[in-house]
Image (tube, protein in one colour):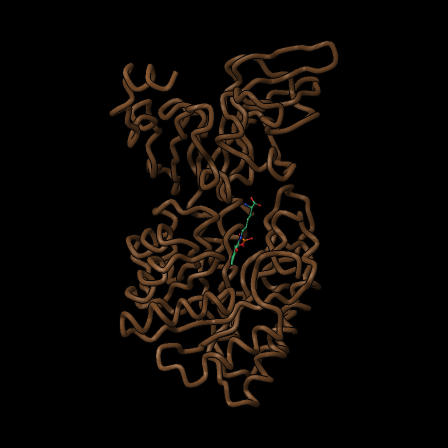
Length: 426
Ligand code: LLP
């Protein structure tokens, strides 16, 4: 569901004409509908209406501080995976007690920051990590609230790069190890086991694996209760699917939650959910301008000004995103590979696409770009990263300015790299 629509063939984001926004801010450009983000918070919290819960927006999907601030104003928390994300979330006004810290490979300095921020809990990924959390907590004299992340060994039936709940992945602990982790916490003054967590993968398009994984961790939660280990939080992770095609039949947030309802009802816990993509993916588009149409012997390439550095999902996961002209004109369609200016053959936004005939200067919109779009962008090929614009009704806000050549140089230095040095290396 999103608030992008057409009037007389022209694409609108809420009440703003996309081509008008582009005239002001140029391309490539991420444009977001704030109403769409808020709508997805609404449907997510409505899905949990009968269960005590906290939605911790997964910042990695799109960590622009404007979206973290919307999350804060909505009353949501955040799921963070680095000191950087934690600082952004705090800066956006999300209180520590509404933030959970996930991810493999937390540095001691990040654990320290999390404890000083009064975090809700840290998801412990392994026994060695738990030992480090304890050491940091002891040093700071701040008891560490922890949740053990369980790897339920369930196939989420998604792209292998974003499947995280299988035994062969680096995430979480198997049930046996998880039990050891809780035993390890017993009697430890500086460790406070408050929760159990999972995250089986992203874009999980079926309820079944989600249910299977949740059953496992809730089973473990119950076993722990029998041993008088009473946890306050069950963190079911993120991973709910976003729509890539409007006609796709995918589970609604209600479907995921109602499948878990019987497992969760009457448990004296607060459920934590960590949705990222399902909140923000459909809120964003990437607008790009056609630089050239280039014909080879076997293909017609539509060369655009957004590359894999701006949007890496097609190159990295073979992701298929809907691409349409911003101004739709009637007429015959042609097959194009829509490619960027980066020097790699994996630099494509879409392949074999049937599009109305386009020419240099035309604008194209790539949909479902709000999640893992800008947040995964880079300066590869020394390309400045794009601006981001958020729209609310008739108003638009520049939530990130376009980078310049000066930004590319920022932090770099040639000090000490002189002729004498190079001569000496010959
Ligand atoms: N919680 C944890 C612990 C996670 O690792 C993730 C995502 C989420 C929550 C949020 O998942 P979501 O609701 O957004 O599916 N770059 C990939 C997606 C990587 C997801 C990594 N973890 C992509 O573009 O598809």
